[in-house]
Image (tube, rainbow, N blue to C red; front, side):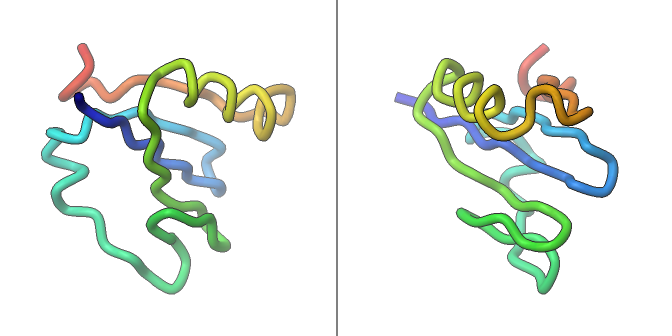
Length: 77
């Protein structure tokens, strides 16, 4: 079963969904401003088991606040 990653970038208000096999996911690193498994000042990468979990999380935390939810054009065409 594959997992999905949600890349939340707060400065641009863009949340991008990636598959766990995406080349972008393979390069993620924790920084002072972006976390892995947690949100920091500029956002973070959060892991989910399904798209429905991502949709629920997005609706609860970001919908109506100007954020956009989109799919990665590389791995989820």
